[in-house]
Length: 319
Image (cartoon, rainbow, N blue to C red; front, top):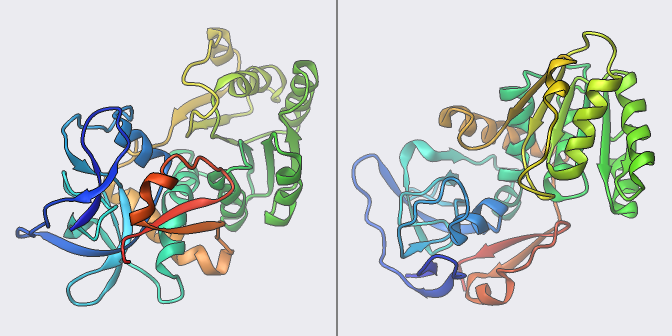
């Protein structure tokens, strides 16, 4: 079969032949219809993700959509190594497949699965979000952040505050449900004032997709400006702006801040799948959608490095 094959650490995958998977008891061979190019997929292919195995060669892709032998349309997650999702066929544990709603097409499901899960799981599984609370989304102009705005509103957030650098994208977030926005493209003193003013009014949950300098400023502002004893749950999801921050210990001692992360390793796998299923069932009624670019897998080399945060690349194995 044809697949996106990673042959060595640090090398981009190539469109090449790979062995056809054969299912053992408890496994399914999925005829793949779509697989999205996510940050996780790219990082695992590079060998830089915390879940990378370091074993080569393997097929890229951590999730996708397809059909089982009986024709059932499914979303599948975490294929059995060395078989990834970016191939004509993939090998998956039967328990890692979720039936797709009829109203949701394969490409859309593949595109929204991981970014939709990122905020849904962070809110429900990690922050224990309660309807009516205020949610602050740091880095809301990318695919995951834009979905996070809609998901927070769908789950009943009383207020949603969103940050980003792109002025036009920030303005469009109002249509997705953001009650207010803060531009990250301003000087440090202006940003600090904006953050502190926001926390004075009470922020219950922060979903952070950026880390780096803006996350540092947010945590310090939360400690300084939140009402006395007001609990803030800060959930770290992505590190687009940097892997590390210098954080004074006093920030965590002087305020009721709970700092936690949300990702593949922090939530039981069965719960992750339940979260994916919830995202799929909410997709149509909540208007969960992203701009997608469906690309034949054969054109892999021309699109692998596509890092656009506005459009999600989805590879289609079929010719």
